[in-house]
Image 1 (cartoon, rainbow, N blue to C red):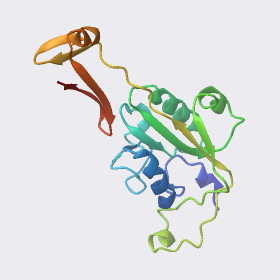
Image 2 (cartoon, rainbow, N blue to C red):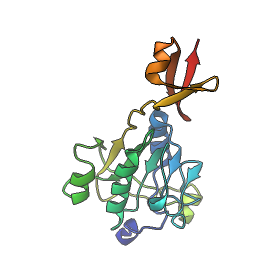
Image 3 (cartoon, rainbow, N blue to C red):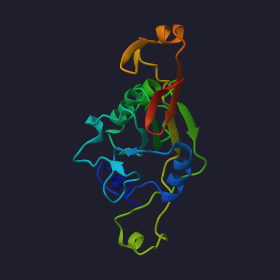
Length: 196
């Protein structure tokens, strides 16, 4: 096992195993992978190292993050926390379980749901010839335990004014005149519609 490669920011040697992601995706329905390559991307929408997910806007997305495990990991954890504060934005990080780090205490502890993964994950080396030929015999579990860090979407507040038949109403006025509003959320975001 090449441990220097393990902590490299730009390689496909430590990609999330597809079956692991698929089970997680059943729960969260991810829409964005912000630290990927065309080979390793788990979502239709993704950012490569050139596009740099750290500088992109993740607002309104359900985000899966398997960050580079080198020195930049603190920046990724900070970014995940900050983006999760945006309306209708959830972020799930697969990362080493290092509860003694400053970034764990600054951005995870008491701020996110944490799931400790039993055993060690065997990551996929998607660039290796063996992998491309379907030979998984040379892959070994990671040298560290892993955890999932989950920042769930905050409840989105209704807008101060909404429009019905071209006329603008505050929520209070709409209720006063007998208009009924259904506020709902789906995969595309939060919406309202009138119930007459």
